[in-house]
Length: 83
View (cartoon, rainbow, N blue to C red):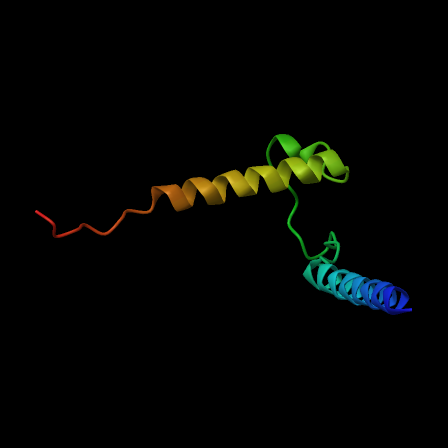
């Protein structure tokens, strides 16, 4: 009897943890609305030919990420006064 209650408690704890994890994962997903052609400027560059396709969109996102990363790497560090 004691073993069954322990097993039931363990299963209940596992269900509660599973529900909390599911809720937490749902909260971290970001929903981005699709851009409308009237409000967004047209794409330029090599991805312009396939802008409506997922490959073109991923190429644009990758290019924007690389540009942001390059810009972050170019920022000068403050000089230290250790000399």
